[in-house]
Image (cartoon, rainbow, N blue to C red; front, side, top):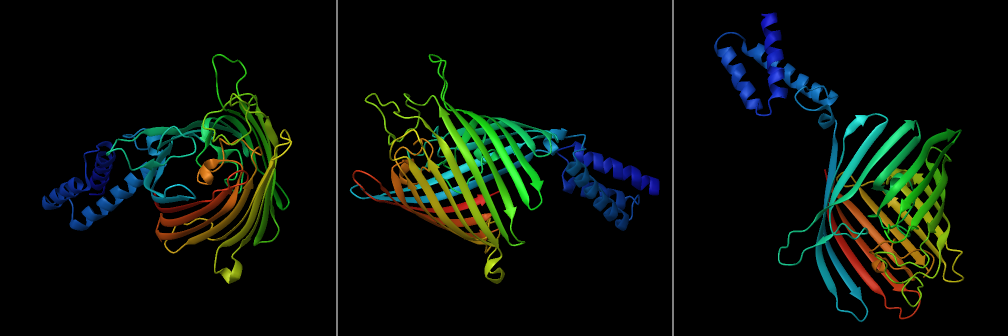
Length: 410
């Protein structure tokens, strides 16, 4: 009988993983027939069913199921959906309210430990600073676009080479979206060093060459060359300090008009950029874990600064902020609060990159942002984000922007 059980176990396991049409109900029916004919006792049938389920789960987890390609069994899939209500108020303009949504779906097929690829599809249009889709145009069918696609090679621990279109955070650490909108994914290549430690310190660095544009009529294309080095320092078990220094060189942008400009940088009569844009940008964050007797998981102070030495004036920017609550809102009842004050002069930075929600992503602005996020369920949260911004020069018409988001990740 033990041999019969073993043979049946192998047959059932093969059936479960080899046939996508074999449901749990069909396997149950087969076992019921075997019990009815006296081949198995009810207890033996139940044991066999549990063993089959465990074996199938094991094979799928290990990627050894012969019925499904190994890469498919080890594919990491994730995504998120966000529903948004947005209210814009600007002095002198009519009030505007919009309903919007965002979908993102990404995958990372597993190839080998040292090499991986990834991709993401997202809603929205061609604008690199937004995946939002507004409800409009008589139920028009919107686009689904390729948001990023990359390959990464890790020849040694702590060393990575990444190329294609990829998330900026893979190669550049920052504390806010003063300089870079959170939706911007860069294109080009980066070399990243991380996890290099000395007693009490963790070092990180990166070197990047990112393509801004390509022209068939001009052999000199605009590029972004970025270097960053930094250190994370565990001051105590509860207190940590992290800082990074980035150097930016936006090569061959002077004399050109870049796509998606907000037209706030200084330009000549033909609309071409007057200055080069490069310089150093330091970022810092001081974090305290479990403050106030563990009533919250963290509190942090953070900031960034940028200066463009190629412009004789209006060439600086900074942000200062406070964050507290839970570092990530994943579970019911978790919460996070953030406040930021930002100041970005006209020619401190290229106006194609800053946060598009803060005065439409322009430079020559200053103002406040306050955010509150609450976990409603596991992987479901509610966020209220408020921006108050104004121009630094000219007509200083202030804008108020409210965003209420319901977000779910899977």
